[in-house]
Length: 111
Image (cartoon, rainbow, N blue to C red):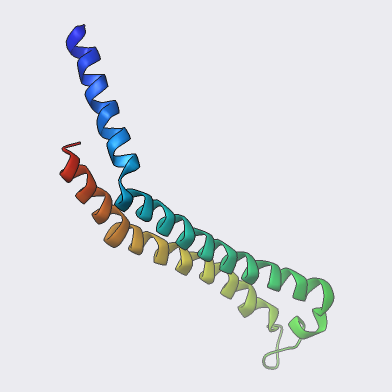
């Protein structure tokens, strides 16, 4: 039982040491800032499309060619594709940069 408490103290010590490390704080700040930038970009795209529907529907109703396809359909698909692409951008950076930096910190602290 004492070993278990000793192990928990050791783990808590690693966590505290990592949390106070300047590299970890920089990683958290960078990751958060990057996530917020992508979120704001996605919200701008989404609400831009919604506002276009609400206030300028005649633009979206413009036919692309003779038939039933209007400009609103590819723009709506563009909103969906933008969400997928922004998610892919975040995942790629998280896997290549954020995870690598966090693994380096864990290795340095033996956690």
